[in-house]
Image (tube, rainbow, N blue to C red):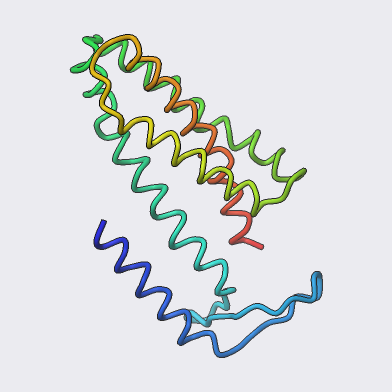
Length: 166
């Protein structure tokens, strides 16, 4: 966690120092700071989204995946096959939901969907962090948390990449 904070602070300082030039987008007339990295020119706002949003989201996602099936087997007494099925359904949701997120972003805007996605994912990870034991309430809370994480990832992941690409 400390390294993520240091990386974010370092990147923000680097962007503030490097953003001496600006670019006016003819599509919306707004002026944006730009950064030259090698032979490529990047919009500073997009680099800021990528570093802060994507790093934290990926850290939470892969940390959770690393212990997911082990937790389900230890806490709920699932067999390896049952935990694998549960894991597969979750991953199906994670990889299917960006399709829905893209449709919603076309209607409501990419920035709004990225923000809503981060909030929904946060709520999902917050639910996962509540120690409820091994009863049915805990099981259904985990199902709900994983559904929120899938939905949040669907709204966040693809739309963030589009914002960086634009």
